[in-house]
Length: 483
Image (cartoon, rainbow, N blue to C red):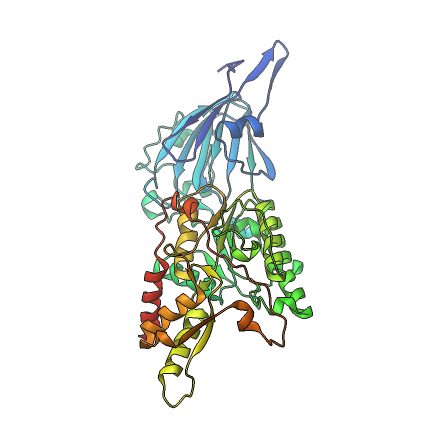
């Protein structure tokens, strides 16, 4: 079949999600032909993912009838023909409603096809001397090979109408013995790495994953993966990972003002995220990173995602530096929160304990002072975990999203009174004071606090995420702690 010259570059969607067929402009004359086989800028504008190829492979098929596949491999592929013609068959072997869906077409040098990870790929050469070439976006390794998924070329349930009957074709012994579709396990998703898994947010993410029967997650802490140590990255085959959720951070805001604390904060909050950002960008990994209201000076009553950084102290400066590094990653989500409440020590639990002490006539504690000139909303880690997977699973546009509880903006003293009221009905024992009064006479360095920590929630709401009112979440939280 002669190559069709001077076609317009076009893309065609198929019945398999993400499988794209391209018409390629081929320029020819009596000497032969020339084509731009893969052109990143033009093809991305037509819908090709920016999949970051790292390897170019060529398969030479000596005779008509050579048949290869069906192999689903753990990388994306861009396939085209250097010489000859093929009949191609693709089978969706990813988990989901399109598992087992089949698409077939013929390719010559004027056509190409983009095959997403997990879609089984096979072809039959239709002329002697067919040259089949493909770009992939991960390096081959033995670990990668273990994740291959196969289905039999001759499975009648696939209904593939091979131009050359398979019994007359040239096939490998392995291809002839692959399982039928009914016996195939779908390809597993790429792995997700979670850092800081023993912290408040990391614990909530682990619970969410367990409750939703999610697989291919690795939970790490500083003992198993110190993400601020460049040497710690060498033991991972990063091509196996699709997502990193960075829930680790240095959060001791006052200690960050000390000599040793300053070093620790810069290492965990700035150097660590910058190293994660480098590996994420290099391997096309989606990086989720948690930020803080402390990147702002608190002069605005409510902060939007686009507000300029203006941190007041070391902790805020290190968090801003980490945000800047992560924002350079093509596939990133920065989740900015404030006043975080989860498992372990936090403000609500502390106020519950103090309320119990005030209620105990033998304790001797009569009242508690709490600052009333800092304003914001609580953020519960269960809500944060749900929001993270909402953005990931919904393929929301990459970028920064504010995420706290919704509802009224209140002071720390207001929140403390409500905790005391729910815990023991002794809310009158909370005495509001100014920040200056609260820290008067402190012997250790005290970090400056933003006056206003409330975050505008319009952007994440527009993605369809329903944000619970923090007061409702707090009532449930207190009930869970009490039970």
